[in-house]
Amino acid sequence: MVEGKKSSHSSPLGQAGFTLLELMISLGIVAIIFVVIYGTFSNVHQGTQQMEADAERYRMTRMSLYYIANDLSMFFVSQDPEGNNAKKTMVFNGKNSERLQGNETFPNDAIEFSTVSHRRIGDVPASEQLVMRYALENRYLIQETRFSNGSILVNELAGPIEGLSFRYLPKNSAEWVETWETLGANPKAPTVVEIEFILKVEGHPPRRFKTWVDLPMGL
Image 1 (tube, rainbow, N blue to C red):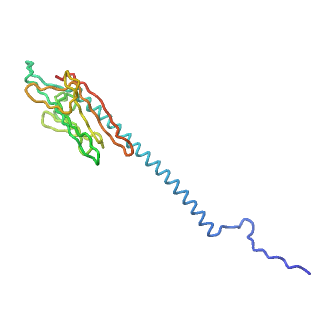
Image 2 (cartoon, rainbow, N blue to C red):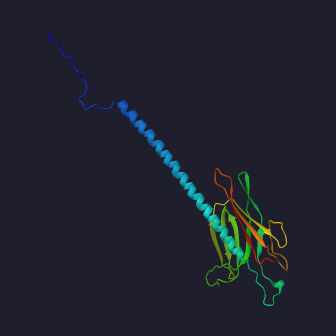
């Protein structure tokens, strides 16, 4: 007897394929891997952007410290030709205040003073005495320059900044004061001004930038 041949339904070599279920599982795995990789790169990108933004804030804050210190170092007192102290013209005022942000309180001081720091607008001589004012407005540092012809130039220098603080050291004193006002016939200026910026980055304690400026013409 001749035995019957066993039939075979196996696919020819090289033509084996995936079933629909296997294909769906493979696509699911690829999708999961893609999501993980995308999430990782997205987090790295966002972190890099935040670091760059923070670095720029720090850089502009340091530059702002330089601007204020430079203007203060050129603090100037006009005097009449006869040298009469009673007729000296001086502007130097320091305002002390605070600002509430959430549950935290930050200094929100302002300062204005006469200076011969170089500025020029229109036909105003660059060497004229100016009045400078620095303050925070909506957490941004504002530089206001008042010229002798009545013109006012306003610049936004840096921000966001949580706090701005000024302190003043009177002549022959070791005690800092929080405010300063030029009053009377013989007004006086401090001998040293302390400037401090406070910046806050989410997840970190506030960062402080501080410097001191000597005023050679402090009376």
